[in-house]
Image 1 (cartoon, rainbow, N blue to C red):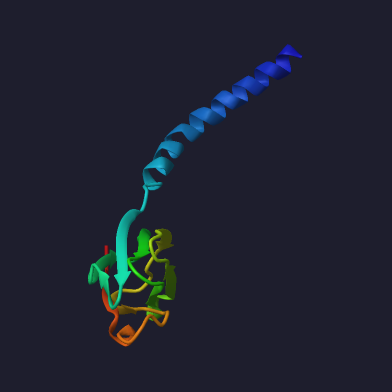
Image 2 (image 1 turned 90 degrees about the horizontal axis):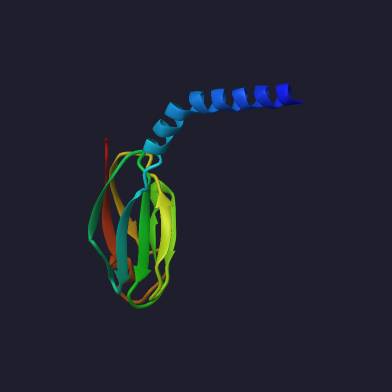
Length: 124
């Protein structure tokens, strides 16, 4: 019985020794995504423009200051609801470069069609 316990202990020590450096490298890559806070209100977004890097994940911290809105970027397949007075976090990773127009995907009043924001997606 002691021999089996010793073999198991040696195996565990060996596994830990081998996984140590890989785990440290893995933790370095597990960086929290950059948070971008976006407010919607009749009839615009704050900020009016944002710049993102292709392939990088962002946490969009979204809210509406008045009525329900959404942040929709058709070309990047994003349509996130924005609730009045509440924040919702959406993880978003743009996969194509270019300049894109975000608009509101929920009818929010007479100025709805004018509501937009520019999203620049650049290389790393």
